[in-house]
Length: 463
Ligand code: BES
Ligand code: MN
Ligand code: MN
Image (cartoon, rainbow, N blue to C red; front, side, top):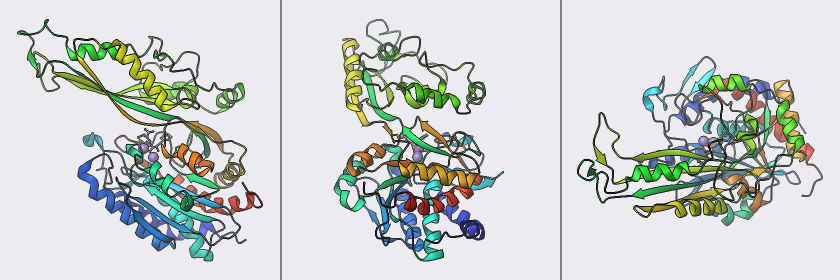
């Protein structure tokens, strides 16, 4: 099989590729905000058009009931493995916008970094896959593997409609391996294969007190203040040492093996520098675990937001009518999202004071996932990364979630290789998101090489 000259291919086209990515990034495809519904569709259409130009076939923008998915394929490598490439073209909201140095949807390159919402998470990384496939088709007219694309527009809102889509199109999406580029590496210059993600289970709780806000002088003291009730409930969810206090929360947690703890400890990770970067006086978390263990392999319960009462300037003497909080748990292998939400809901209901109305709205859940490190697709990824970056790849886990990843495993029976080119400091979900261009350049080369390496490593396998 020919090995294409990836360096020359990408070097010759770099300016054009970056200009195209910037066009993609200019489309404000914020999936969470209904005002951007049409922008999300425009981003899907842009991507579909770009896939067509790259030489992909059966390119479609398909309805899901929510934001559409973009699908495409190239299936002319009989006998070679089939790869499903997954990514997301939707992005997170941009607030607080005033903290962006340049506007989130006016991409700009500064100091070798491309700044824009979605630059790294995940339009930039998804676009790299289009370029890697295009490189093969332009240079040789073929690919060493069969390729299917599935790019969704709802990842940042929990992939609500994607499970059903995957279930409906199981045959069409069937693959030997799923490849996802939507995770960070551990540090600059150190390529990584990520072999595990945490799951997620979320819920919103609301405490309703008096029918409307009350003058706190006239009525204060005669009714239970909803904020007081809410914060009491929330405070009962953790022990002071940081452990989650919900009965049953840790019951199914798969413990870390001594080997994995050793492997984590060997990774270059400086807790003090991490602390400094986060700007906290001291790190805090579940006792008995290192920081990497806490964020990669231990479950958490976090408060994501809290509202209620007067938020404006100055004071306002009221007893507010209601208070609410958004809660999400990060889950690790063997925890079941529904069981966790059951345990959490039970804990809160048992403690909810009778002087207020307490309601719960359960959000979506998705379990954690880990891939076996000895799978040939994982090994091939590590080899190609080493070749491209000139140093061995780290095997890492990550604490974030990609809700459809466990679905691929379950419905398609395929391992998911997380071949991410982001960096932890690229401001995912925050102001001034950027993508480090060094990883754009090395990443497209690694991905193009990966298709040849994968075909080789899986030759003759039937599973
Ligand atoms: N790309 C991230 C997932 C991620 C982030 C993995 C960091 C590993 C490290 C993805 O776009 C994301 O943000 N997912 C959400 C999912 C949620 C909305 C259900 C997350 O993890 O919060
Ligand atoms: Mn992402
Ligand atoms: Mn994200």
